[in-house]
Length: 167
Image (cartoon, rainbow, N blue to C red; front, top):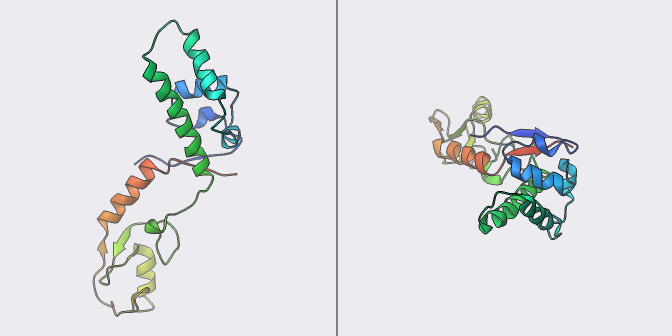
């Protein structure tokens, strides 16, 4: 699983892990140096494509034409990723423990079939034998690790939640 990275709006784009030196070069040549500058960029603006064409024309080494289109697409993907990070800590409801209203931590499933964070349901069961959602009696019934949920969380965090913007 990729480590979650926290960045500030004033952070240099160079601090964003995993975007690659070519993309950083394009952003900086286009005048974007901070995370904040990328969040307000209008992706319909042609400045990125003009910058990429300029870089392409100045290079002695030739790349296939598809390379430059992919580079442009990757730049736009990074901008959208940064914009979506502004909404963090958004927790998709599928990955939210109904007791903590936050990310599942060590997800488990009860006899009722509902998932909870282990610590949250264990605390709940110290004061009640009823399932928090269904109110059915689950006292004494085992709780099982929800491996499928853990894998889904890991997949989501690896592919969709790379970093958060703090301010």
